[in-house]
Length: 390
Ligand SMILES: [Zn+2]
Image (cartoon, rainbow, N blue to C red; front, side, top):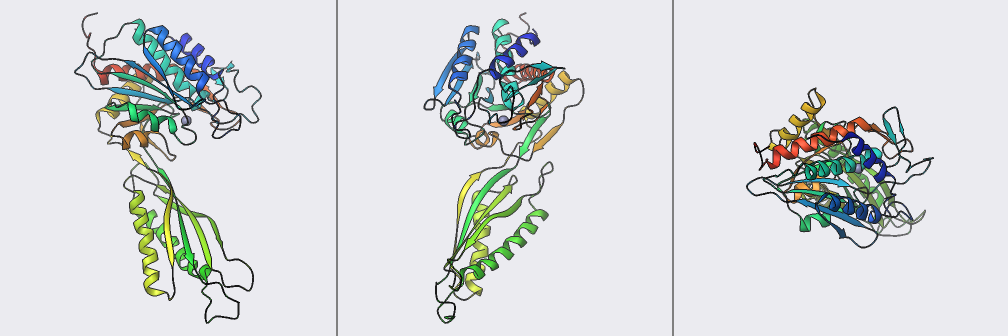
């Protein structure tokens, strides 16, 4: 029972050849529709249960199942179908192979993962592997933009754990940062520049807030540490206030962005910001301000000793014939949505380069290795029902 390298690479070329640019990012992007239908046909051909989950044309997921015989843990392999745009790429869909590198949009992020998952599906079907726990393959939409694919998926699909496929050089990602955007507004009183008796300066009031945010940022650098992640950070990308020269500023608006670490929640950050405003309400005459959350994507981490982590780490170490590491990613991934739904997850994916640039490529051999790691992880995690019978 072996992953077929030639089939895996041919599949990679096929799926790179089907344009699935995310229409949320790229005007005219065709979305996942065609690719989802193609994959569904392929998997059904192998004998899998597979269905397109219609998210409103042209957005689509594929959900495929290999039911277990019972008594084992269920596992999902989750990989996104959408890609970013192709500007500056002479041949984004050609998937030409040169020196073992497969070139084109999505090769590394993350159609290498798509091809590996399909190769696993073929091997399981060809060998008629009987698992104890269910195996679900989820090919999802929109990871590059708003993650509608995984959001909709978890309304219908629940497994004990998930392996999310994103580039990782075949190391095992067990944590990633989240991000959030918050808006703070100070309110003043517009008045002629000479009327200090009635004018209230919202911009100067925001100055207090800015100094306090600067302190909060330094405080975050000292705490909220995860062993594999940088500390949480915040910065202020947008600031605007006032109406015109010679008039007291009646409002000032600030937008701040946080990159968060496990342990921080939207509520905990809102409480920290609210405490800053409350301090100035008590200290600064006529200080009026509000804060609200604009966007939130949670950070994620899994216990390094968890069964899932150890299973994938062992498989990766065996296939690579060298110790695989546990690592963290500084950017956000769909694993946080799965984690929040009670599906613990790790992230693993192939080696490559040029992600989101015009020079994207993936190492073909690492895609084959990824498939081998996934296959070994599935057998170990879901359990073999036909163990010893062949
Ligand atoms: Zn990706």
